[in-house]
Length: 254
Image (cartoon, rainbow, N blue to C red; front, side):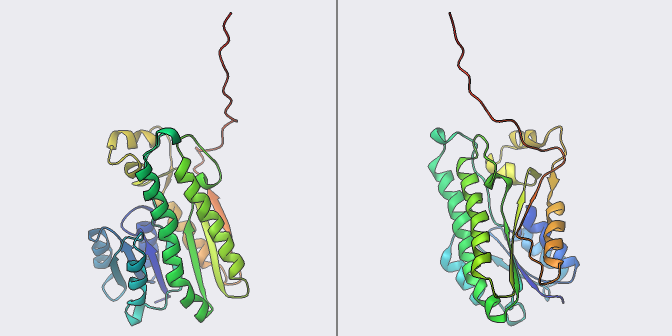
């Protein structure tokens, strides 16, 4: 075994791809998600001696702390956190957005990340080794219509990771924020609350990033020599780029 990685949001998307990547490389896996069945599939694939699974909603502060505190001895020295749990909900402009959607994104993308890092970081500092990988987004830097609260939460992730780096100066604990652009996972299906047709249109006619693409990037930044810290990495498909500034023009009559 090469070490222990704790992955949130491991039931699908980037988290699941990272779990498979690190499992194939011989790491011990602590996998958490709200859905248990996908975690059990990974445990069956890599073995109970290599995989500890936790049914966990990262929005639950006490549950996160208890899950970390009760890790079995063979899994308790977590060297790497991949904080992949996160979501977007809705694409309405702010004036028509559902406030419940906003709260869900804040509770998951911001609070869930804080709870997880706060539970695992003291052990990393005490052992003077470790790596925290946060899952940001290009939306944390570049706004788009309907991105309102989601982009705000990912801007928090970006600044939180940068400030962790400042706090951890003088330790051997690294922090990296990965900032993917458009990627074909369950992301849009969740954003559109199960609307398969609307979700499929997001990726129609293009070649987006995939979850294994991001898992390879996470693997690379965490496999560098221990004195090398990749602070952040923004990555897009070759088929995605930035557009011109949006300008509203009034039609003049007469």
